[in-house]
Image (cartoon, rainbow, N blue to C red; front, side):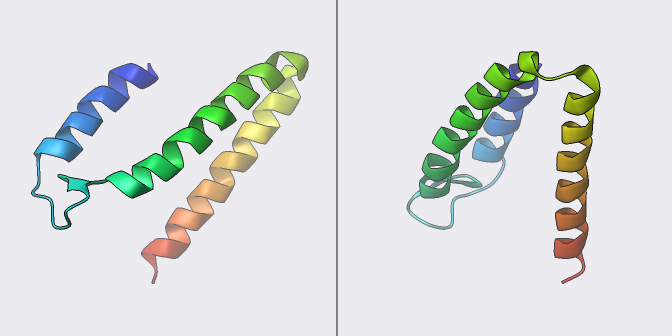
Length: 80
C-alpha cells in the first residue's frame, strides 16, 4: 500500500508547485530527499527483520509508541 500512496503523493509534490531553490523539484528538496531516503530504507529493512521476532503485543506497543511520539512532535510543531 505504501507505493500506492507514495507515488501519487510524490508526483503531486513535484508537479503541483514551482521550485523556489535550484535543487528542488516542485516542493521536493533534493538534498533533503537524498538524506532521508537511505535512512528510511535502512529503517524499513531493520523493521522487517525485527518484526517476525517480536510478539504481536510487543510489536503493537512499539508501533503505538512511535505513533504517539510522532503525534506529540506534530502537535508541538503546530503550536510554534
